[in-house]
Amino acid sequence: MKVPLDYENTDAGSIDMVVSRTRSTNPPARRGVLIVNQGGPAPHANDTFEIFPRSLTDAYDIISFDQRGFGRSAPVRCQVPASRDTLIPWPQPGGFAEDVSVAKQIARNCVEQGGPVIAHMGTAYVARDMEVLRKALGESKISYLGMSYGSYLGTAYASLFPEHTDRVLLVSVSSPDRMWRGHWQRSLGEGFALRFPDFARHVGQPVDEVYPRLVTLTKQLDRAPLQTPRGVLDGNVLRAAIYAAMYNDGQLPMLASLAHAVAAGDAATAGDMALQLGAWRPTDRAAAMLGVSCSDGDWPRSMSVYQREVHADAVRYPLFAGAGSNVWPCAFWPYPVDERVRANPRGPQNILIINNVRDPSTPLANAQELRAAFGDRARLVTVEQGGHNAYLYSPNVCANDAGTAFLLGATAHDKNCVEIDNGTTGAAGVGDRQGRVVDGHHAGPW
Image (spheres, helix red, strand yellow):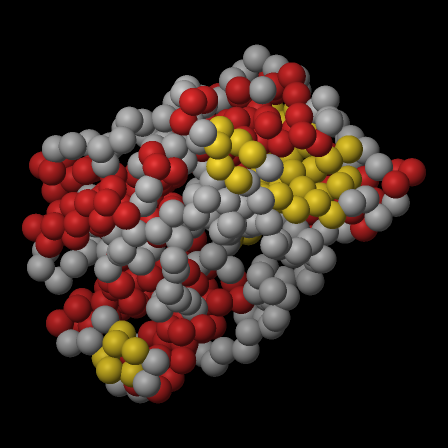
């Protein structure tokens, strides 16, 4: 599908956007189209939906796409140092001065190598692409399911084009007022603080004992990285692994094993656990993700702002050494900020928000803010569990049923979901995102 490169200057030409469509498995029961974005930002045209209940695949043609700059939709690339191949600006060994130098170099590389698309990748652009897609599909209205970052895209579309929305389900949400810089400040701060007791319960130790031990291990690895068969495990690799483990209860045993192995100097086990948690997972999407995040909001240009907030965050949340407030390449981004979309309370009452109470990545406060901003248009389902992704990838029957019923046309209500389908709220033995059961050993004190 062709979409304009620049919606404010249609003479700038067009780009290709790759779209996939899985048609309804029961055409007589078809309700319409459901556009799905499972987060990221990331390419989604190749997504599969085996986890969707049959009632949804009967009711909808399932639509997904590679958003501009990703996958096969005019992809952008620029050189990013291996130590900064994710958006989280983990502290560099040389301190804040090196953080600034690395961020400035990444911005320079992206400007030189990214091409014209990288200047037009904000979420408002992608929402406009979705409107072109709606017209191409010949639908007067679309339904939408957005998870994590996809929730912000859904917020943008429902705010810009409310008259063309049917059902809008936003899961594990990002608040428009907290996108990107505010998001990481919150997720590496209060979100993690709410989630961490789940890990402490898993290892059977008090929070005020477990947390300082992990801080000690990260600082130990800052000074003397562990050489493992899988790669060099330094403090930032451990920080990344800790953060990743909190996304799913099934990964908590691996984190316990990793911490135990680091403390014991067991390089082989530590390397295996860090690898399984994705701490070294390479990504070629960092440049494209910067194209979105740097276009979505105003970033301070004063380095003193970042330095002051990094110091304050490092004191409040020492496990992540101030990364939540650290300087991004966006501080040196030369392109103008795209339209910053606020939640629009004027429109149909057709939005449901679902969020875990102890989500480290998209804390519940985001969902509460978004619910308030949408006013009577939205309802909120809170889920009494930890981890990221509160619908379909969650074991909570109440939340899953609420989301599916809403997409099938049921009236949404504010509610709280507590029951879990396997009868346990403990961490051990809970399946991860792929449905596997992760078997880790009790680490004991480390």
